[in-house]
Image 1 (cartoon, one colour):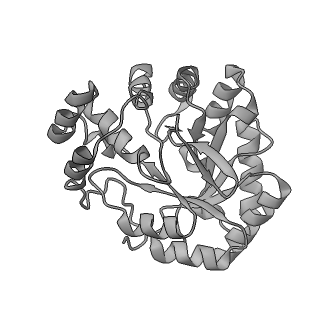
Image 2: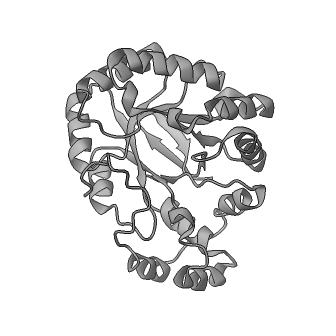
Length: 272
């Protein structure tokens, strides 16, 4: 396993995403992921599955200090009181005293950024979270967050995969000591059986999806959180630490970088 170190936080570069997993399916999938060896679990208030994630973790018997758990604050709770009440609710559902990382889920012009980040910073000082960060922030919003927040922004979680360039975000993050966590790292199924990735994968006995994930985690300061409903796919996603893409592979994959975005709600910010 590769680890990323940012602002005193150390977390696995490969995590398990839970977006769109609900109920018993979510609980089973998280339990299977933990059995496989995942120790970085990502959830969010808006996913409505924190309770299931919490039960799966509790049932696993894995010590809390061995896990890195992320949850996210939804945009309707960005006012100060909402930040505190939301954290209390998340911790209760997750059956935890703290999360490792607490993120603003999207930018929101309707609430002052400083108000939200100051409250999150207070939760950090209280020990309710070990780190704070943001999600879906383009560079302009990342810059504002750093200027207006007294606590270190540990990471920005964004959609990132071989079909979507995030060069401006990556450059800014690296220049300011922030990690980038890639969600939808397999482009929501668009990379299955991709011809170029399949061709490269044959060199290593790997699938196109494994090549796509390896491409992400080989990058400095980049983590990936693929979702998998089945234990088979969760295992495939996990088995990416026994090979390295060479320079020729990286050059070929770089030609795929474009603007294929699979998550773009009407409230999204102006992307880079």
